[in-house]
Structure formats: C-alpha cells, structure tokens
Amino acid sequence: MKKLLTGNEAIARGAWEAGVKVCTAYPGTPSTEITENAASYSEMYAEWSPNEKVALEVGLGAAIIGGRALVAMKHVGVNVAADPLFTLAYTGINAGLVLVSADDPGMHSSQNEQDNRNFGKAAKIPVLEPSDSQEAKEFTKIAFELSEAFDTPVMLRTTTRVAHSQSLVELEPRQEIPLKNYEKNIQKYVMMPGFARPRHVAVEARLEKLMEYAETCSLNRMELRQRQLGIIASGAVYQYVREVLPNASTLKLGMTYPLPRKLIEEFAGQVENLYVIEELDPFIEDQLKAWGIKVHGKDTFPLVGEILPEIIQEKLGSTYGQNKNEPENTESSDNFLHIPVRPPVMCPGCPHRGLFYILNKLKLTVTGDIGCYTLGAQAPHHAMDTTICMGASIGAAIGMEKARGKEFARKLVAVIGDSTFIHSGITGLIDAVYNKATTTVIILDNRTTAMTGHQNNPLNGRTIKGEATKEVNLPLLAKAVGVDRVVEVDPFNLTELETIIKQE
Ligand SMILES: Cc1ncc(C[n+]2csc(CCOP(=O)(O)OP(=O)(O)O)c2C)c(N)n1
Image (cartoon, rainbow, N blue to C red; front, side, top):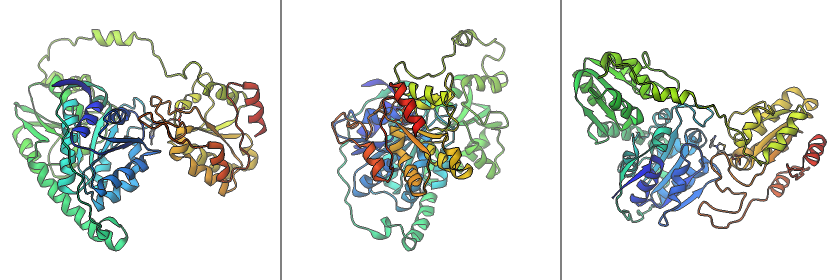
C-alpha cells in the first residue's frame, strides 16, 4: 500500500518497520514530527527528553543493551548532543542507533544554518541524505542495517524541504527484531584513555571499510544522460536538478560521508563539465578538490540559504536547460510577491505579552533565550538585548553583571521559558547562585513548549503519549539550588507584575 507522507512521518514509519524499540528527541523544527509520529506506534517507547544530550544518552543506552534506537533533533540540537556523539563513535553501538539531524538551510525557523554534514565528518560516522519521503523511510531502514554492520552510530541528515514536503511512500510491515545479546565489555564501552586509544584505531579502520562500502552501495547512483553536463547532488537538491535539467547526467549521493572516490572519479571522467550543487558548505566540493578533481560549485552557487530550482535555472538553465529560449513563467512568483508579509507575533492571549510590556516600560536590559518569548525583541516591545542559543540567557546576565558591576545588574533581567529552563537553564541558575550574581531571572512558565507546537515537557505533568506523570516544581527547584527570593506572579496581573519586577 502507498501513502502520502511527509519526510518526518516517513522516518517514523521507517523506524517502526525497522523494529526500533526506543525513540527519543527534544523538539525542534524541522525535526519535531518524527517523534510525535513515532509516539503513535504502540510497539515503540517514545519520549521527549529534557534536551538533545539526554535524548542521545537514552538512545545509546538502549542500543548498547540491545534494542534499536532512533534519536531525532534539529541541527543545533546536535551541538548539545555532540559530547556523547563523538565518544559514541568510539564505543560503537550494539543494536542500531540512528541520529536524525534535521538541518534548516534558509533558516525557516532557526537561529543559524550550520551544515551538519560537518559533524558526521568530525565524528567519523556515516551520513545519509534522503531526497524525498520514500527515501526518508528506506534510508532510515538502511541506516539501521549499516549501523549494526559497521558498529557505528549513523547520521540521517534531512533538510526542511525533505522533512516537511509530502510524497508517496510504499508501506511495509514491521520487522520484529529480537533484542541483541549484550555482553559486558569494559574495553569497548568504558572510555577512559587506556581503552579509548585502541577504539580510535578501530574508528579509523571502520572508516576505511565504510569508504569501500560507499563505492558500491545502492545509496549512491550514477545516472548517465547527456555528457555535456554532469551534476553531483544529494537530498532535495537532486530533485530540483532533475526538474530543471532533466537531460544532465547526475551522480546522486545518498551517502555524503564518507564519499566514494572511485565512483566520483569515474563520473567526472564521463562528463565534460562537472558541478557539485549543494546547499550551505562546499562539503562535497572541497573533498573533490582535495582529490584533484576539477569541479565547479561555490564559484557558481550560493554558500548561504537554500538552493531552489529557480537558482539552478538561473545559473545553468540558459546554457544547459531544455527551455533555453522560452521566457520563464513568472506568474506564480508574481502572485507570491503580492501576499502581505506576516511576521510571527505572539498569539492573542499569550501570557508573555504582559511581561514584555512591563520590561519595555521599565527600560531594562534583558538577556533573552529561545522560544515564543524571543518575539519580545520585536515591535511593539523591543524588550530584549541578546538571544544566542537555548539556555544562554542566565549565563549572559551573569557575565554582564560581572563585567559592569552590581549597580548595572539592578536594571538587568534574564528571561527564559519553562522548557528552555529545563533544557539548559538550570546550570546557569546554579552558576548565578554559586558565583553570587544578583541578577533577576524570570522563568516564563506557560506549561508547554509552545514555539515548536505545544509539546509536553517535564513541567506540565504529561508524557509524549499524553500519560499523566510527575511534574517538576519550579519554585522548589529554584530554592533547592540556593535561590533565596522566589516570587510567583501572574503575568496577566500587570499591576502586580510591575510592582514585583521593580522590587526584584
Ligand atoms: C538546541 C535547540 N534545540 C531545540 C530548539 C528549538 N526550540 C526553539 S525554542 C524551543 C522551546 C521553547 O519552549 P519554552 O522555553 O517553554 O518557551 P515557549 O515557546 O513555550 O514560550 C525549542 C524546542 C533550538 N532552537 N535549539
């Protein structure tokens, strides 16, 4: 049976078909729906973890003890999970472990557009890049096979277009994979220097084998058509190339790390003009140049943002395209231009509005954080001075106070959402207490992870499957780490809110 699925739904389906036991994640666009969908399959345990590092740690525990695990996050989430990831690459897994990194070229909803293929290379683990929903499901299953065959975590890298667009997917039944045998193996799983050194040697040997695998695996495919133009592409860009330049020869790379040198050299030898078209970094291009292959890439295509079909048409269409002489149909883009711009705003009735109204009125310096409340930086409030990454608000406020002194800190506050506080704010608060900062921290507790679509979190008493669970008591937690003054205030009560903020 075939079904229309988004890439994210297809990855969840792929995990289910691959017999996965445990799915973990911290929400983040464009990855969130993977785990929301995974949670709908009763055969799989699923959780929202407090942050991406914990998500990967829970996943690696499941894999080492013998159950397949899927761990999903947005690209910046991999920064948070990088610590366990790099050492997990040394220990290897036991049952398969697949880490989905959902990248966001164009920054549809992110604070940066880092290219996480670099993480695959730096951690020396394979990177697979599906280009539609069918591949999203297939590659997820192949990733688990690969993970077990080579004893390595595997990164499945998607981008917003693959994650959120829909295409037909062939559904298959779940393969029940029995738990793998677990044997205690201190040399393999306890990474202290004496045991880690031989594991690094094992990682390099594994990489050599993965390079051989890349040469012949079904993930990489040479498609020879007209020889005048040859294009190497992966992910959504491959689909755009097929659409805009249907006669060009293509080398479709489903595995972008490690790269298949012989296959690429063979392809380069078959075509007159060779291009790598890839979003963000010249990841493939740089490797080709290091191998001495003559190739065009970032000399023609942008380093920044998405590479859309229009850009490929503009750069190569007139020379190599089918419709070289036909004027481009601009009707749809004209219509698009007439749609009024609708910048994101806080929802009507949002409890954050009152707070930012007061912060603006009091002309405070505000170190911000990431969530719906980041919109407090925009009109009409303009009540935020910094936003860097999740959890940075409290540390930034401490730093400002330490640089400028206590007097400055009297008009300084850090604002942080409830989910963000649990994600990575608590350690900042402990720093404030331990190092005697006097800054005021405001936790905006709206009892949900609103920005990414209202996911449950450890503060609201519900799991990802909607089951009742314990909830963290924020005032008690703050007192427990040593905060002497903890005040609770309803942000809809503006008079009281203003009085308390002035007081604190
Ligand atoms: C490392 C990282 N993981 C995930 C995200 C995606 N993300 C942005 S804000 C946010 C949570 C916001 O929730 P909360 O702090 O409760 O604030 P609210 O949106 O509810 O106001 C998430 C998950 C991110 N930007 N960075």
